[in-house]
Image (cartoon, rainbow over all chains, first blue to last red; front, side, top):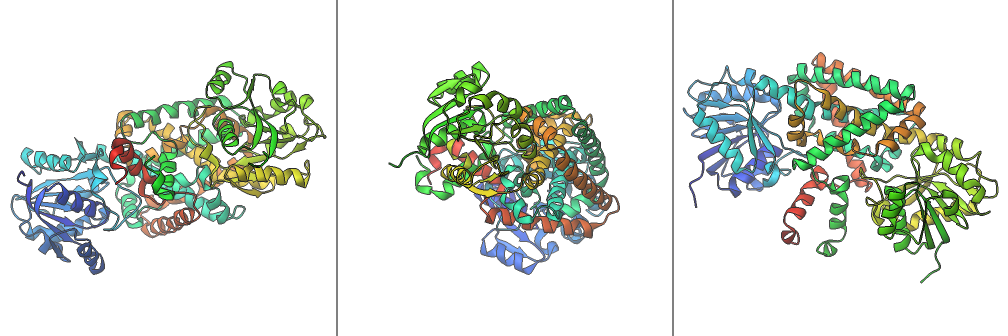
Length: 317
Length: 317
Protein backbone atom coordinates (compact mmCIF):
# COMPACT_ATOMS: atom_id res chain seq x y z
CA UNK A 1 0.00 0.00 0.00
CA UNK A 2 1.49 3.32 -1.04
CA UNK A 3 2.03 6.28 1.30
CA UNK A 4 -0.94 8.68 1.44
CA UNK A 5 -0.48 11.95 -0.50
CA UNK A 6 -0.98 13.99 2.69
CA UNK A 7 -0.50 13.36 6.36
CA UNK A 8 -3.34 15.50 7.62
CA UNK A 9 -6.23 17.00 5.60
CA UNK A 10 -8.59 19.55 7.16
CA UNK A 11 -12.06 19.95 5.67
CA UNK A 12 -13.56 23.33 6.54
CA UNK A 13 -17.24 22.74 5.98
CA UNK A 14 -18.81 19.27 5.69
CA UNK A 15 -21.73 19.71 3.28
CA UNK A 16 -22.17 17.89 -0.03
CA UNK A 17 -18.65 18.63 -1.29
CA UNK A 18 -16.82 18.40 2.05
CA UNK A 19 -18.46 15.13 2.98
CA UNK A 20 -17.90 13.66 -0.48
CA UNK A 21 -14.22 14.57 -0.12
CA UNK A 22 -14.09 12.95 3.31
CA UNK A 23 -15.48 9.75 1.86
CA UNK A 24 -13.20 9.58 -1.17
CA UNK A 25 -10.10 10.57 0.86
CA UNK A 26 -10.76 7.67 3.19
CA UNK A 27 -11.61 5.18 0.45
CA UNK A 28 -8.55 6.06 -1.62
CA UNK A 29 -6.31 6.44 1.44
CA UNK A 30 -5.24 9.95 0.45
CA UNK A 31 -4.46 11.11 4.02
CA UNK A 32 -3.47 9.58 7.34
CA UNK A 33 -5.82 11.85 9.25
CA UNK A 34 -9.03 13.62 8.21
CA UNK A 35 -10.07 16.64 10.28
CA UNK A 36 -13.67 17.77 10.01
CA UNK A 37 -14.72 21.30 10.86
CA UNK A 38 -18.07 22.99 10.76
CA UNK A 39 -19.51 25.74 12.93
CA UNK A 40 -22.90 24.22 13.54
CA UNK A 41 -22.80 21.77 16.42
CA UNK A 42 -25.64 19.71 14.94
CA UNK A 43 -23.84 19.23 11.62
CA UNK A 44 -20.59 18.38 13.38
CA UNK A 45 -22.37 15.71 15.41
CA UNK A 46 -23.93 14.30 12.28
CA UNK A 47 -20.50 14.13 10.62
CA UNK A 48 -19.26 12.25 13.68
CA UNK A 49 -22.18 9.81 13.49
CA UNK A 50 -21.37 9.21 9.84
CA UNK A 51 -17.75 8.61 10.83
CA UNK A 52 -16.56 11.01 8.14
CA UNK A 53 -13.30 12.01 9.86
CA UNK A 54 -10.81 11.23 12.59
CA UNK A 55 -11.17 14.44 14.59
CA UNK A 56 -13.95 17.00 14.78
CA UNK A 57 -13.71 20.70 15.65
CA UNK A 58 -16.20 23.54 15.68
CA UNK A 59 -13.28 25.99 15.51
CA UNK A 60 -11.70 26.34 12.06
CA UNK A 61 -8.41 27.55 13.59
CA UNK A 62 -8.08 24.41 15.70
CA UNK A 63 -9.02 22.23 12.74
CA UNK A 64 -6.21 23.46 10.47
CA UNK A 65 -3.40 23.13 13.04
CA UNK A 66 -0.64 20.89 11.56
CA UNK A 67 -2.73 20.17 8.43
CA UNK A 68 -0.79 19.73 5.16
CA UNK A 69 -3.88 20.32 3.06
CA UNK A 70 -6.77 22.61 4.00
CA UNK A 71 -9.85 22.48 1.79
CA UNK A 72 -12.36 25.26 2.36
CA UNK A 73 -15.80 23.86 1.47
CA UNK A 74 -18.15 26.66 2.56
CA UNK A 75 -20.47 28.96 0.56
CA UNK A 76 -18.36 31.53 -1.31
CA UNK A 77 -19.71 34.35 0.84
CA UNK A 78 -18.05 32.84 3.92
CA UNK A 79 -14.53 32.33 2.47
CA UNK A 80 -13.12 35.63 3.73
CA UNK A 81 -14.16 34.95 7.28
CA UNK A 82 -12.78 31.42 7.19
CA UNK A 83 -9.47 32.73 5.82
CA UNK A 84 -9.22 35.25 8.67
CA UNK A 85 -9.96 32.55 11.22
CA UNK A 86 -7.46 30.00 9.95
CA UNK A 87 -4.64 32.38 8.91
CA UNK A 88 -2.82 32.51 12.28
CA UNK A 89 -3.05 28.75 12.78
CA UNK A 90 -1.83 27.50 9.38
CA UNK A 91 1.33 25.42 9.23
CA UNK A 92 4.04 26.95 6.99
CA UNK A 93 4.10 25.08 3.70
CA UNK A 94 0.49 23.92 4.00
CA UNK A 95 -1.57 23.90 0.80
CA UNK A 96 -4.80 25.87 1.15
CA UNK A 97 -7.48 25.45 -1.49
CA UNK A 98 -11.23 25.88 -1.83
CA UNK A 99 -14.09 24.46 -3.88
CA UNK A 100 -16.08 27.61 -4.58
CA UNK A 101 -18.00 28.22 -7.79
CA UNK A 102 -16.65 31.78 -8.15
CA UNK A 103 -12.91 32.33 -8.22
CA UNK A 104 -12.18 36.07 -8.49
CA UNK A 105 -14.26 36.84 -5.40
CA UNK A 106 -12.77 33.96 -3.39
CA UNK A 107 -9.26 35.16 -4.28
CA UNK A 108 -10.14 38.73 -3.30
CA UNK A 109 -11.47 37.53 0.03
CA UNK A 110 -8.77 34.99 0.92
CA UNK A 111 -5.48 36.03 -0.69
CA UNK A 112 -4.88 39.24 1.31
CA UNK A 113 -5.54 37.45 4.60
CA UNK A 114 -3.55 34.24 4.15
CA UNK A 115 0.14 34.28 5.21
CA UNK A 116 2.88 34.19 2.57
CA UNK A 117 4.30 31.05 4.17
CA UNK A 118 1.51 28.85 2.79
CA UNK A 119 0.63 27.68 -0.72
CA UNK A 120 -2.71 29.06 -1.86
CA UNK A 121 -4.27 27.36 -4.90
CA UNK A 122 -7.90 28.29 -5.58
CA UNK A 123 -9.91 25.39 -6.99
CA UNK A 124 -13.34 24.31 -8.15
CA UNK A 125 -14.55 20.76 -8.70
CA UNK A 126 -17.31 20.83 -11.35
CA UNK A 127 -19.49 18.37 -9.50
CA UNK A 128 -22.54 18.43 -7.32
CA UNK A 129 -26.11 17.32 -6.94
CA UNK A 130 -29.23 19.13 -5.79
CA UNK A 131 -28.86 17.62 -2.33
CA UNK A 132 -26.89 19.22 0.50
CA UNK A 133 -25.46 18.43 3.91
CA UNK A 134 -23.13 15.69 5.22
CA UNK A 135 -25.59 12.92 4.38
CA UNK A 136 -25.73 13.93 0.73
CA UNK A 137 -22.06 13.28 -0.05
CA UNK A 138 -20.71 10.18 -1.76
CA UNK A 139 -17.23 9.07 -2.79
CA UNK A 140 -18.13 8.83 -6.48
CA UNK A 141 -19.16 12.48 -6.82
CA UNK A 142 -15.97 13.59 -8.54
CA UNK A 143 -15.50 10.64 -10.83
CA UNK A 144 -15.14 11.62 -14.48
CA UNK A 145 -15.84 15.28 -13.57
CA UNK A 146 -13.48 18.17 -14.17
CA UNK A 147 -11.74 20.11 -11.42
CA UNK A 148 -10.50 23.58 -12.36
CA UNK A 149 -7.53 25.07 -10.53
CA UNK A 150 -6.88 28.81 -10.90
CA UNK A 151 -3.36 29.38 -9.50
CA UNK A 152 -2.43 33.04 -9.04
CA UNK A 153 1.31 32.90 -8.35
CA UNK A 154 0.76 32.32 -4.65
CA UNK A 155 1.93 28.71 -4.78
CA UNK A 156 4.88 26.68 -6.08
CA UNK A 157 4.53 24.47 -9.14
CA UNK A 158 5.03 21.51 -6.82
CA UNK A 159 2.04 22.52 -4.71
CA UNK A 160 -0.17 22.92 -7.79
CA UNK A 161 0.98 19.55 -9.08
CA UNK A 162 0.39 17.86 -5.74
CA UNK A 163 -3.11 19.29 -5.55
CA UNK A 164 -3.73 18.11 -9.13
CA UNK A 165 -2.66 14.61 -8.15
CA UNK A 166 -5.03 14.77 -5.20
CA UNK A 167 -8.01 15.62 -7.41
CA UNK A 168 -7.02 12.96 -9.91
CA UNK A 169 -6.94 10.46 -7.09
CA UNK A 170 -10.51 11.58 -6.27
CA UNK A 171 -11.47 10.54 -9.81
CA UNK A 172 -11.38 13.97 -11.47
CA UNK A 173 -9.63 15.36 -14.50
CA UNK A 174 -7.81 18.61 -13.79
CA UNK A 175 -7.67 21.84 -15.81
CA UNK A 176 -5.98 25.10 -14.92
CA UNK A 177 -7.46 28.41 -15.93
CA UNK A 178 -7.33 32.13 -15.33
CA UNK A 179 -9.78 33.05 -12.51
CA UNK A 180 -11.67 35.61 -14.57
CA UNK A 181 -12.09 33.19 -17.43
CA UNK A 182 -13.30 30.56 -14.95
CA UNK A 183 -15.94 32.97 -13.71
CA UNK A 184 -17.20 33.62 -17.25
CA UNK A 185 -17.29 29.91 -18.11
CA UNK A 186 -19.14 29.04 -14.92
CA UNK A 187 -21.57 31.89 -15.44
CA UNK A 188 -22.84 30.21 -18.61
CA UNK A 189 -22.49 26.50 -17.76
CA UNK A 190 -23.72 26.67 -14.19
CA UNK A 191 -24.86 30.00 -12.79
CA UNK A 192 -27.21 31.03 -15.60
CA UNK A 193 -28.84 27.56 -15.74
CA UNK A 194 -29.50 27.62 -12.00
CA UNK A 195 -30.88 31.17 -12.09
CA UNK A 196 -33.14 30.32 -15.03
CA UNK A 197 -34.32 27.18 -13.28
CA UNK A 198 -35.08 29.04 -10.05
CA UNK A 199 -36.87 31.68 -12.06
CA UNK A 200 -39.14 29.40 -14.07
CA UNK A 201 -40.12 27.42 -11.00
CA UNK A 202 -40.93 30.70 -9.28
CA UNK A 203 -43.02 31.85 -12.25
CA UNK A 204 -45.00 28.60 -12.25
CA UNK A 205 -45.53 28.86 -8.51
CA UNK A 206 -47.05 32.33 -8.91
CA UNK A 207 -49.65 31.64 -11.58
CA UNK A 208 -53.30 32.30 -10.87
CA UNK A 209 -54.74 30.54 -13.94
CA UNK A 210 -52.89 27.25 -13.48
CA UNK A 211 -52.90 25.63 -10.05
CA UNK A 212 -49.81 24.35 -8.32
CA UNK A 213 -51.31 20.90 -8.25
CA UNK A 214 -51.61 20.97 -12.05
CA UNK A 215 -47.99 22.07 -12.39
CA UNK A 216 -46.96 19.12 -10.24
CA UNK A 217 -49.19 16.52 -11.91
CA UNK A 218 -48.13 17.34 -15.44
CA UNK A 219 -44.50 18.21 -14.72
CA UNK A 220 -43.15 15.19 -16.62
CA UNK A 221 -43.73 17.10 -19.84
CA UNK A 222 -40.65 19.24 -19.27
CA UNK A 223 -41.01 21.34 -16.14
CA UNK A 224 -39.58 18.71 -13.78
CA UNK A 225 -36.19 18.92 -15.47
CA UNK A 226 -35.83 22.45 -14.07
CA UNK A 227 -36.92 21.61 -10.56
CA UNK A 228 -33.77 19.63 -9.84
CA UNK A 229 -31.47 22.65 -10.18
CA UNK A 230 -34.07 24.81 -8.45
CA UNK A 231 -33.84 22.52 -5.41
CA UNK A 232 -30.15 23.36 -4.86
CA UNK A 233 -28.89 24.91 -1.64
CA UNK A 234 -30.30 28.47 -1.28
CA UNK A 235 -27.37 29.90 0.73
CA UNK A 236 -24.80 28.60 -1.70
CA UNK A 237 -26.69 30.04 -4.66
CA UNK A 238 -27.43 33.38 -3.06
CA UNK A 239 -23.69 33.73 -2.46
CA UNK A 240 -22.79 32.76 -6.02
CA UNK A 241 -25.20 35.36 -7.41
CA UNK A 242 -23.71 38.03 -5.18
CA UNK A 243 -20.10 37.01 -5.88
CA UNK A 244 -20.09 36.53 -9.64
CA UNK A 245 -22.37 39.43 -10.40
CA UNK A 246 -20.66 40.89 -13.46
CA UNK A 247 -20.30 37.67 -15.42
CA UNK A 248 -23.82 36.56 -14.47
CA UNK A 249 -25.38 39.86 -15.51
CA UNK A 250 -23.54 39.67 -18.83
CA UNK A 251 -24.86 36.16 -19.51
CA UNK A 252 -28.36 37.11 -18.35
CA UNK A 253 -28.36 40.05 -20.77
CA UNK A 254 -27.40 37.80 -23.68
CA UNK A 255 -29.96 35.19 -22.69
CA UNK A 256 -32.71 37.82 -22.49
CA UNK A 257 -31.72 39.30 -25.83
CA UNK A 258 -31.92 35.87 -27.46
CA UNK A 259 -35.22 35.14 -25.73
CA UNK A 260 -36.69 38.38 -27.08
CA UNK A 261 -35.73 37.32 -30.59
CA UNK A 262 -37.32 33.91 -30.01
CA UNK A 263 -40.45 35.55 -28.59
CA UNK A 264 -40.66 37.72 -31.66
CA UNK A 265 -40.35 34.67 -33.93
CA UNK A 266 -43.24 33.04 -32.07
CA UNK A 267 -45.38 36.18 -32.23
CA UNK A 268 -44.84 36.63 -35.97
CA UNK A 269 -45.10 32.94 -36.81
CA UNK A 270 -41.54 32.71 -38.12
CA UNK A 271 -41.33 28.91 -38.27
CA UNK A 272 -38.01 28.87 -40.06
CA UNK A 273 -36.17 30.74 -37.30
CA UNK A 274 -37.69 28.42 -34.71
CA UNK A 275 -36.83 25.31 -36.69
CA UNK A 276 -33.24 26.42 -37.23
CA UNK A 277 -32.62 27.12 -33.54
CA UNK A 278 -34.33 23.90 -32.46
CA UNK A 279 -32.13 21.94 -34.88
CA UNK A 280 -28.72 23.30 -33.93
CA UNK A 281 -29.26 22.82 -30.19
CA UNK A 282 -29.55 19.06 -30.75
CA UNK A 283 -25.91 18.79 -31.74
CA UNK A 284 -24.71 20.14 -28.40
CA UNK A 285 -26.41 17.41 -26.42
CA UNK A 286 -24.82 14.81 -28.66
CA UNK A 287 -21.38 16.32 -27.93
CA UNK A 288 -22.02 16.33 -24.19
CA UNK A 289 -22.94 12.66 -24.25
CA UNK A 290 -19.92 11.85 -26.43
CA UNK A 291 -17.69 13.70 -23.93
CA UNK A 292 -19.00 11.46 -21.13
CA UNK A 293 -20.65 14.39 -19.35
CA UNK A 294 -24.17 12.98 -19.52
CA UNK A 295 -25.91 9.66 -20.00
CA UNK A 296 -27.38 8.76 -23.39
CA UNK A 297 -30.44 7.00 -21.98
CA UNK A 298 -33.72 8.84 -22.64
CA UNK A 299 -35.01 11.05 -19.81
CA UNK A 300 -31.59 10.93 -18.11
CA UNK A 301 -32.25 7.23 -17.56
CA UNK A 302 -35.02 7.93 -15.03
CA UNK A 303 -36.93 4.92 -16.29
CA UNK A 304 -34.06 2.59 -15.44
CA UNK A 305 -33.89 4.09 -11.95
CA UNK A 306 -37.65 3.86 -11.49
CA UNK A 307 -37.79 0.25 -12.56
CA UNK A 308 -34.83 -0.58 -10.35
CA UNK A 309 -36.47 0.92 -7.29
CA UNK A 310 -39.91 -0.48 -8.17
CA UNK A 311 -38.84 -4.06 -8.75
CA UNK A 312 -35.32 -4.77 -7.50
CA UNK A 313 -35.71 -8.47 -8.12
CA UNK A 314 -36.25 -7.83 -11.82
CA UNK A 315 -33.34 -5.46 -12.19
CA UNK A 316 -30.89 -8.22 -12.85
CA UNK A 317 -32.72 -9.54 -15.91
CA UNK B 1 -57.91 -13.85 -22.07
CA UNK B 2 -60.37 -10.98 -22.32
CA UNK B 3 -61.62 -9.47 -25.58
CA UNK B 4 -59.49 -6.56 -26.87
CA UNK B 5 -61.01 -3.08 -26.36
CA UNK B 6 -60.93 -2.41 -30.11
CA UNK B 7 -60.99 -4.54 -33.20
CA UNK B 8 -58.82 -2.33 -35.38
CA UNK B 9 -56.65 0.60 -34.30
CA UNK B 10 -55.05 2.89 -36.87
CA UNK B 11 -51.96 4.87 -35.88
CA UNK B 12 -51.45 7.91 -38.10
CA UNK B 13 -47.78 8.71 -37.59
CA UNK B 14 -45.31 6.27 -36.06
CA UNK B 15 -42.79 8.47 -34.20
CA UNK B 16 -42.03 8.32 -30.48
CA UNK B 17 -45.70 8.42 -29.39
CA UNK B 18 -47.16 6.35 -32.25
CA UNK B 19 -44.58 3.63 -31.92
CA UNK B 20 -44.91 3.54 -28.12
CA UNK B 21 -48.65 3.12 -28.59
CA UNK B 22 -48.08 0.30 -31.10
CA UNK B 23 -45.90 -1.50 -28.57
CA UNK B 24 -48.22 -1.12 -25.60
CA UNK B 25 -51.33 -1.96 -27.64
CA UNK B 26 -49.71 -5.21 -28.68
CA UNK B 27 -48.34 -6.05 -25.25
CA UNK B 28 -51.64 -5.37 -23.51
CA UNK B 29 -53.70 -6.92 -26.32
CA UNK B 30 -55.81 -3.77 -26.75
CA UNK B 31 -56.67 -4.42 -30.41
CA UNK B 32 -56.97 -7.34 -32.79
CA UNK B 33 -55.29 -5.43 -35.57
CA UNK B 34 -52.81 -2.53 -35.52
CA UNK B 35 -52.57 -0.42 -38.66
CA UNK B 36 -49.49 1.74 -39.12
CA UNK B 37 -49.49 4.78 -41.36
CA UNK B 38 -46.79 7.28 -42.13
CA UNK B 39 -46.10 9.25 -45.28
CA UNK B 40 -42.36 8.71 -45.46
CA UNK B 41 -41.54 5.40 -47.13
CA UNK B 42 -38.33 5.03 -45.13
CA UNK B 43 -40.11 5.39 -41.78
CA UNK B 44 -42.85 2.99 -42.87
CA UNK B 45 -40.23 0.40 -43.78
CA UNK B 46 -38.52 0.85 -40.45
CA UNK B 47 -41.85 0.35 -38.65
CA UNK B 48 -42.31 -2.86 -40.63
CA UNK B 49 -38.82 -4.05 -39.69
CA UNK B 50 -39.63 -3.36 -36.05
CA UNK B 51 -42.85 -5.34 -36.49
CA UNK B 52 -44.86 -2.55 -34.92
CA UNK B 53 -48.16 -3.32 -36.66
CA UNK B 54 -50.13 -5.81 -38.71
CA UNK B 55 -50.62 -3.71 -41.84
CA UNK B 56 -48.71 -0.73 -43.19
CA UNK B 57 -49.96 2.09 -45.42
CA UNK B 58 -48.42 5.27 -46.72
CA UNK B 59 -51.96 6.61 -47.34
CA UNK B 60 -53.78 7.80 -44.24
CA UNK B 61 -57.17 7.28 -45.91
CA UNK B 62 -56.43 3.62 -46.58
CA UNK B 63 -55.08 3.16 -43.08
CA UNK B 64 -58.26 4.29 -41.31
CA UNK B 65 -60.66 2.17 -43.35
CA UNK B 66 -62.72 -0.01 -40.93
CA UNK B 67 -60.74 1.22 -37.93
CA UNK B 68 -62.64 1.55 -34.63
CA UNK B 69 -60.02 3.81 -33.12
CA UNK B 70 -57.89 6.27 -35.07
CA UNK B 71 -55.04 7.95 -33.17
CA UNK B 72 -53.43 10.88 -34.96
CA UNK B 73 -49.79 11.04 -33.81
CA UNK B 74 -48.32 13.73 -36.06
CA UNK B 75 -46.90 17.20 -35.27
CA UNK B 76 -49.79 19.56 -34.44
CA UNK B 77 -49.20 21.56 -37.61
CA UNK B 78 -50.15 18.54 -39.73
CA UNK B 79 -53.43 17.63 -37.99
CA UNK B 80 -55.67 19.59 -40.35
CA UNK B 81 -54.27 17.92 -43.42
CA UNK B 82 -54.56 14.47 -41.84
CA UNK B 83 -58.17 15.17 -40.88
CA UNK B 84 -58.97 16.17 -44.48
CA UNK B 85 -57.33 13.02 -45.81
CA UNK B 86 -59.04 10.57 -43.48
CA UNK B 87 -62.49 12.21 -43.27
CA UNK B 88 -64.05 10.47 -46.31
CA UNK B 89 -62.70 7.06 -45.29
CA UNK B 90 -63.69 6.96 -41.63
CA UNK B 91 -66.10 4.28 -40.48
CA UNK B 92 -69.27 5.68 -38.85
CA UNK B 93 -68.97 5.33 -35.08
CA UNK B 94 -65.18 5.28 -35.13
CA UNK B 95 -63.42 7.13 -32.31
CA UNK B 96 -60.90 9.67 -33.61
CA UNK B 97 -58.38 11.13 -31.20
CA UNK B 98 -54.95 12.75 -31.28
CA UNK B 99 -51.93 13.16 -29.03
CA UNK B 100 -51.01 16.77 -29.77
CA UNK B 101 -49.56 19.11 -27.18
CA UNK B 102 -51.91 21.96 -28.17
CA UNK B 103 -55.65 21.36 -28.07
CA UNK B 104 -57.45 24.52 -29.27
CA UNK B 105 -55.50 24.56 -32.51
CA UNK B 106 -55.96 20.84 -33.15
CA UNK B 107 -59.70 21.20 -32.58
CA UNK B 108 -59.87 24.18 -34.94
CA UNK B 109 -58.04 22.20 -37.60
CA UNK B 110 -59.82 18.86 -37.24
CA UNK B 111 -63.36 19.43 -35.96
CA UNK B 112 -64.75 21.25 -39.04
CA UNK B 113 -63.40 18.59 -41.38
CA UNK B 114 -64.38 15.39 -39.57
CA UNK B 115 -67.82 13.92 -40.35
CA UNK B 116 -70.59 14.07 -37.72
CA UNK B 117 -70.90 10.29 -37.87
CA UNK B 118 -67.68 9.74 -35.90
CA UNK B 119 -66.73 10.35 -32.27
CA UNK B 120 -64.02 13.01 -31.99
CA UNK B 121 -62.21 13.17 -28.62
CA UNK B 122 -59.06 15.33 -28.60
CA UNK B 123 -56.39 13.96 -26.27
CA UNK B 124 -52.87 14.50 -25.02
CA UNK B 125 -50.70 11.98 -23.18
CA UNK B 126 -48.26 13.90 -20.96
CA UNK B 127 -45.33 11.68 -21.82
CA UNK B 128 -42.31 11.76 -24.03
CA UNK B 129 -38.56 11.72 -24.18
CA UNK B 130 -36.05 13.77 -26.13
CA UNK B 131 -35.74 10.98 -28.69
CA UNK B 132 -37.90 10.66 -31.78
CA UNK B 133 -38.82 8.21 -34.52
CA UNK B 134 -40.16 4.64 -34.48
CA UNK B 135 -37.05 3.26 -32.78
CA UNK B 136 -37.43 5.63 -29.83
CA UNK B 137 -40.78 4.30 -28.62
CA UNK B 138 -41.27 1.86 -25.76
CA UNK B 139 -44.32 0.26 -24.17
CA UNK B 140 -43.62 1.78 -20.74
CA UNK B 141 -43.73 5.39 -21.94
CA UNK B 142 -47.21 6.09 -20.59
CA UNK B 143 -46.93 4.28 -17.28
CA UNK B 144 -47.77 6.48 -14.32
CA UNK B 145 -48.13 9.52 -16.63
CA UNK B 146 -51.29 11.54 -17.08
CA UNK B 147 -53.35 11.65 -20.25
CA UNK B 148 -55.60 14.67 -20.69
CA UNK B 149 -58.77 14.37 -22.76
CA UNK B 150 -60.51 17.57 -23.86
CA UNK B 151 -63.94 16.47 -25.15
CA UNK B 152 -65.89 19.21 -26.96
CA UNK B 153 -69.35 17.72 -27.28
CA UNK B 154 -68.45 15.91 -30.50
CA UNK B 155 -68.51 12.49 -28.87
CA UNK B 156 -70.80 10.37 -26.71
CA UNK B 157 -70.01 9.75 -23.05
CA UNK B 158 -69.47 6.12 -23.99
CA UNK B 159 -66.79 7.04 -26.49
CA UNK B 160 -64.99 9.25 -23.96
CA UNK B 161 -65.17 6.48 -21.38
CA UNK B 162 -63.91 3.87 -23.82
CA UNK B 163 -60.96 6.07 -24.78
CA UNK B 164 -60.25 6.63 -21.07
CA UNK B 165 -60.19 2.89 -20.51
CA UNK B 166 -57.80 2.57 -23.43
CA UNK B 167 -55.33 5.06 -21.93
CA UNK B 168 -55.64 3.45 -18.53
CA UNK B 169 -54.80 0.13 -20.11
CA UNK B 170 -51.69 1.83 -21.53
CA UNK B 171 -50.67 2.62 -17.94
CA UNK B 172 -51.87 6.23 -17.77
CA UNK B 173 -54.15 8.10 -15.44
CA UNK B 174 -56.81 10.12 -17.24
CA UNK B 175 -58.01 13.67 -16.66
CA UNK B 176 -60.53 15.67 -18.65
CA UNK B 177 -60.17 19.38 -19.13
CA UNK B 178 -61.34 22.35 -21.13
CA UNK B 179 -59.11 22.75 -24.23
CA UNK B 180 -58.19 26.35 -23.47
CA UNK B 181 -57.24 25.50 -19.93
CA UNK B 182 -55.17 22.58 -21.24
CA UNK B 183 -53.27 24.97 -23.50
CA UNK B 184 -52.49 27.30 -20.60
CA UNK B 185 -51.36 24.44 -18.34
CA UNK B 186 -49.15 22.97 -21.04
CA UNK B 187 -47.70 26.37 -21.85
CA UNK B 188 -46.21 26.54 -18.37
CA UNK B 189 -45.37 22.88 -17.65
CA UNK B 190 -44.04 21.97 -21.07
CA UNK B 191 -43.86 24.66 -23.74
CA UNK B 192 -42.10 27.37 -21.74
CA UNK B 193 -39.52 24.89 -20.32
CA UNK B 194 -38.70 23.66 -23.83
CA UNK B 195 -38.43 27.18 -25.23
CA UNK B 196 -36.20 28.31 -22.35
CA UNK B 197 -34.03 25.23 -22.77
CA UNK B 198 -33.67 25.79 -26.52
CA UNK B 199 -32.87 29.42 -25.85
CA UNK B 200 -30.16 28.91 -23.25
CA UNK B 201 -28.45 26.26 -25.32
CA UNK B 202 -28.53 28.66 -28.26
CA UNK B 203 -27.08 31.46 -26.11
CA UNK B 204 -24.23 29.23 -24.95
CA UNK B 205 -23.56 28.13 -28.52
CA UNK B 206 -23.15 31.76 -29.62
CA UNK B 207 -20.64 33.01 -27.06
CA UNK B 208 -17.30 34.37 -28.20
CA UNK B 209 -15.61 34.46 -24.77
CA UNK B 210 -16.38 30.88 -23.78
CA UNK B 211 -15.67 28.13 -26.29
CA UNK B 212 -18.13 25.41 -27.18
CA UNK B 213 -15.66 22.82 -25.97
CA UNK B 214 -15.65 24.47 -22.52
CA UNK B 215 -19.43 24.49 -22.43
CA UNK B 216 -19.41 20.77 -23.18
CA UNK B 217 -16.62 19.83 -20.76
CA UNK B 218 -18.10 21.62 -17.78
CA UNK B 219 -21.76 21.01 -18.56
CA UNK B 220 -22.27 18.74 -15.55
CA UNK B 221 -22.48 21.84 -13.38
CA UNK B 222 -26.02 22.57 -14.56
CA UNK B 223 -26.11 23.26 -18.28
CA UNK B 224 -26.53 19.62 -19.31
CA UNK B 225 -29.95 19.46 -17.64
CA UNK B 226 -31.25 21.88 -20.29
CA UNK B 227 -29.75 20.08 -23.24
CA UNK B 228 -32.12 17.14 -22.91
CA UNK B 229 -35.23 19.21 -23.66
CA UNK B 230 -33.27 21.18 -26.27
CA UNK B 231 -32.63 17.92 -28.13
CA UNK B 232 -36.34 17.34 -28.73
CA UNK B 233 -37.82 17.04 -32.20
CA UNK B 234 -37.52 20.41 -34.03
CA UNK B 235 -40.59 19.99 -36.25
CA UNK B 236 -42.81 19.06 -33.33
CA UNK B 237 -41.62 22.04 -31.32
CA UNK B 238 -41.80 24.52 -34.15
CA UNK B 239 -45.43 23.50 -34.60
CA UNK B 240 -46.22 23.79 -30.89
CA UNK B 241 -44.77 27.31 -30.80
CA UNK B 242 -46.86 28.31 -33.80
CA UNK B 243 -50.04 26.63 -32.54
CA UNK B 244 -50.14 27.70 -28.90
CA UNK B 245 -48.88 31.19 -29.50
CA UNK B 246 -51.12 33.16 -27.15
CA UNK B 247 -50.63 31.02 -24.06
CA UNK B 248 -46.89 30.72 -24.72
CA UNK B 249 -46.46 34.47 -25.18
CA UNK B 250 -48.34 35.07 -21.94
CA UNK B 251 -46.09 32.68 -20.00
CA UNK B 252 -42.98 34.09 -21.66
CA UNK B 253 -44.00 37.59 -20.61
CA UNK B 254 -44.42 36.50 -17.00
CA UNK B 255 -41.15 34.59 -17.04
CA UNK B 256 -39.29 37.63 -18.42
CA UNK B 257 -40.89 39.93 -15.89
CA UNK B 258 -39.78 37.66 -13.05
CA UNK B 259 -36.32 37.32 -14.58
CA UNK B 260 -35.96 41.10 -14.69
CA UNK B 261 -36.77 41.28 -10.99
CA UNK B 262 -34.21 38.57 -10.28
CA UNK B 263 -31.63 40.36 -12.42
CA UNK B 264 -32.27 43.53 -10.47
CA UNK B 265 -31.80 41.68 -7.16
CA UNK B 266 -28.45 40.38 -8.42
CA UNK B 267 -27.36 43.81 -9.63
CA UNK B 268 -28.23 45.50 -6.35
CA UNK B 269 -26.93 42.72 -4.14
CA UNK B 270 -30.35 41.96 -2.65
CA UNK B 271 -29.43 38.67 -1.00
CA UNK B 272 -32.71 38.35 0.87
CA UNK B 273 -34.84 38.35 -2.29
CA UNK B 274 -32.53 35.76 -3.84
CA UNK B 275 -32.56 33.57 -0.75
CA UNK B 276 -36.35 33.69 -0.47
CA UNK B 277 -36.91 32.66 -4.08
CA UNK B 278 -34.26 29.93 -3.90
CA UNK B 279 -35.93 28.54 -0.79
CA UNK B 280 -39.53 28.33 -1.97
CA UNK B 281 -38.63 26.60 -5.24
CA UNK B 282 -37.26 23.63 -3.27
CA UNK B 283 -40.71 22.71 -2.02
CA UNK B 284 -42.06 22.21 -5.53
CA UNK B 285 -39.50 19.57 -6.38
CA UNK B 286 -40.37 17.72 -3.20
CA UNK B 287 -44.06 17.71 -4.24
CA UNK B 288 -43.21 16.43 -7.72
CA UNK B 289 -41.26 13.54 -6.26
CA UNK B 290 -44.04 12.79 -3.76
CA UNK B 291 -46.54 12.76 -6.64
CA UNK B 292 -44.45 10.10 -8.41
CA UNK B 293 -43.66 12.43 -11.30
CA UNK B 294 -39.88 12.32 -10.82
CA UNK B 295 -37.27 10.13 -9.16
CA UNK B 296 -35.82 11.14 -5.80
CA UNK B 297 -32.29 9.94 -6.60
CA UNK B 298 -29.76 12.80 -6.92
CA UNK B 299 -28.99 13.98 -10.45
CA UNK B 300 -32.12 12.20 -11.76
CA UNK B 301 -30.33 8.96 -10.85
CA UNK B 302 -27.77 9.38 -13.61
CA UNK B 303 -25.14 7.84 -11.36
CA UNK B 304 -27.13 4.64 -11.04
CA UNK B 305 -27.51 4.49 -14.81
CA UNK B 306 -23.83 5.20 -15.38
CA UNK B 307 -22.71 2.54 -12.95
CA UNK B 308 -25.14 0.07 -14.44
CA UNK B 309 -23.80 0.60 -17.92
CA UNK B 310 -20.17 0.78 -16.76
CA UNK B 311 -20.17 -2.37 -14.68
CA UNK B 312 -23.26 -4.50 -15.18
CA UNK B 313 -21.82 -7.30 -13.07
CA UNK B 314 -21.75 -4.99 -10.04
CA UNK B 315 -25.26 -3.71 -10.54
CA UNK B 316 -26.75 -6.62 -8.69
CA UNK B 317 -24.84 -5.94 -5.46
